[in-house]
Amino acid sequence: GQWWEPAFILAAFAGCRLGESLAPLAGDVELIDMDGIDVALVPITGQLASTGNKIVKPKTPQSVRTVVVAGRAARRLKEIADSIPSDWPLSNNGFGERYPQARLKDTWRKMRMEHPYRNLRNGWQTYMRWDLKVEPHYIEVMMGHKVAGITGAHYDRPDREQFARVVADAYRKNHYDDGWNWLSRE
Image (cartoon, rainbow, N blue to C red; front, side, top):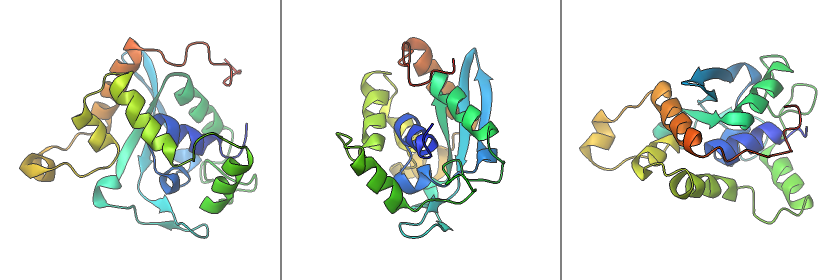
């Protein structure tokens, strides 16, 4: 229920960078059923600048992608998106305005969280590889990384449905959110 909850979900459960996690609008979130698994699709087309509240170009051309959140976190993200105007940032101050990155970092620090916010992305990659058993070559593209070689540069162009299927299949094998109580609305 905090202003930063959508950004947290996008960083921890979709591998977004800090600025990317603060950029999407409520209207960007789409919830679909992927073979019986709820997944939220969120296009990442820019990032919140490191200072101020302006959306700027993404870190790299490969950073433009659709990120996928599965399960309870996907439903919660959509619930938040549906509770505010579609042209408002998902993470906002209650008046439709963005907080700068520094505000999220400061809030995170004041909550005395064990790991820096930026490490949520690292954690996402680790559990995708080791707990959900997703192949590294899928994860690299989902993170917006450039994949080496001719295939990476010219041929490997997965779409959002392919991302969604990989995440939904991994989630189906390991419902990591069973028993979570922070999503008490379910």
